[in-house]
Image (cartoon, rainbow, N blue to C red):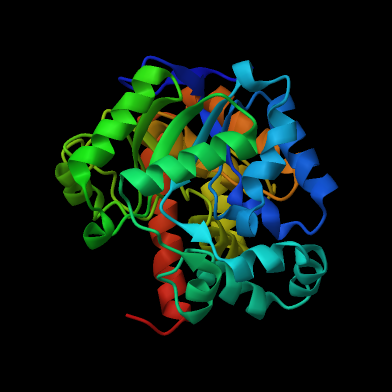
Length: 340
């Protein structure tokens, strides 16, 4: 079991790292997706993040058999406010061959990753996803459906999914409903996930939120308590952008590999070194809840678990130096791309 971390102010804890399930659906085969989930559990990961839109509507249904017999041991986040359209649900039924084909066409696959951000991500996003709004009725419909799809009696963390201000309506009725569901035990806590710049205004409109979930990577300055309201914080995105930038830089700079390996006392030529460092930094930056990561390879789950186990060994000086390495890599990337 990995070290536990309390979601501040909620009264319950979970593993320091959690698995984001959206990325699982880059894997064409359901059996392999389940292998990743099992590997995460075996490595001690106990927090799993899902949403109705993930996997074009299949993610919650697919997580359900994994939870059977394990529900009391794990925490689950799901969300409301973005739903797959009928077109997306139709595509989902044939997504195995589609995913297999996309694996051979990275450029098209990247376009669909952008579309997967939701209905505000272009034409394809609008075709695949709908925003029913953020109000009492949409929360009720989505919660009932998620409980049914996940085959569970309760959701640990229930979040407004990337809300836009003008779509949040009937706020007193919405927050009253969510608080009522907490009292009934159907959810343990609720909050908001979205762009960190917009979170403060959304939380102010709602009046309160027990949990905020947002992207945080080493290229961004750490957010202060005042910038992101809410006691419990769940962060994600530590690897998505930073890891490719750092890997490209070190692949083109053998001297940098040698010098930074010495400075950080770790072999950066090893594939697992950079993701472990980046996750360790993310864990130090967020002490109020778990850090999410995604992977499509069962063998990489151990890297995240190792980061959680050894994060205490990362000194303040190490944190500074990893930040300096990231800045150096980003400057190099901008120079190679011809940007100032």
